[in-house]
Image (cartoon, rainbow, N blue to C red):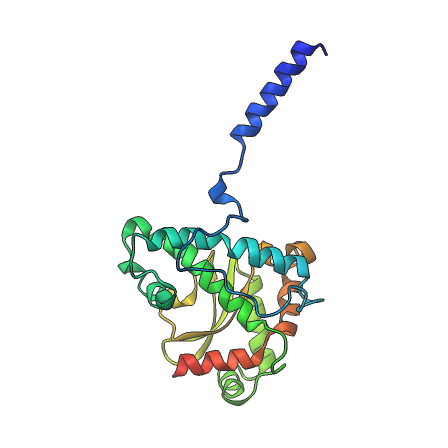
Length: 239
């Protein structure tokens, strides 16, 4: 290959690379613009959930995937005054009130922010390893026992087609229910009283360690659930 052909080939490759470049808004490591929404700390080390959830997954998931939602939220908050951290659940429950030109972005970004903040919180190390008190009573009343609840939760979460979440919620009737939502939707958008716990079943939540074995990840996840946090979520929902 002579110099002319090499330069021509290099120029073509560079042009293709430019056309195929990933837009900054699509990069999972996008950082939040300044504004009211900030990345909440985990409250524990990235390796604290080992061996069930690995350090690298937690670090990338928290600092890149979760952080990516915040820039869009802070930008949207400049156009929609109701979009503040204090109003997060109110806005999610009343998405129809969000201006139409902002609604899809708020749905995805605020949903993703809320979902992840809840996810980190309910997985904190320590706390009760099994449900007790009012939560245990509610589980037994609805599902028969904890094992049956887990089986249904696992089936629903593993069965979510594509990306999304599995949830244990307090429905509008005041009873526990297991539901799944797509993408970054959450059950608050559907009128539940509250969320007891939720699991992220997007591939980025488990792929580094479990590859395509979503069922293994969901089953192992119970080892890091903090039932004290889940009980507090139930109390809040019923309050």
